[in-house]
Image (cartoon, rainbow, N blue to C red; front, side, top):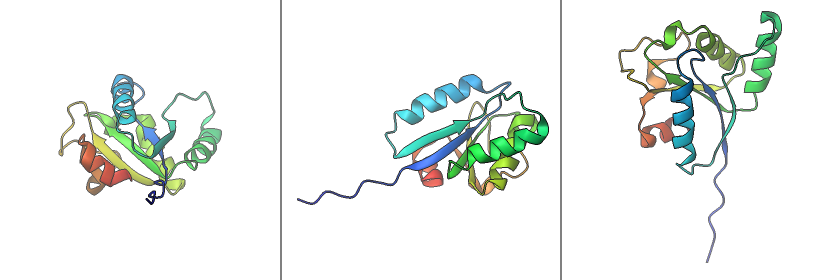
Length: 133
């Protein structure tokens, strides 16, 4: 009997609206953990009391621990200062950036700059797995 090689663990950084998306992020992470995918969340949006010049440097270095940045797309995500900023930082860190529609957002929800509609999927675990794995 031959064992299949273990799947390579993908590293993910979660980006969400800090003002309006904390509960959605918590629920999403709980359900994600139940999927038993070879996936490790290496970081997530958080408040930092850093001055703007150091914030970018610290965030980009933190994001470099990941391979994929996943944006939780909520109806007001394009107006979220931290999401817009973190998508830009993820690009600077050379991460693949994908999004998932949550909390009533639709295919017509305005996306933050840098997140392309072709990389956004609905909250469907099969589609999401294809997008991030």
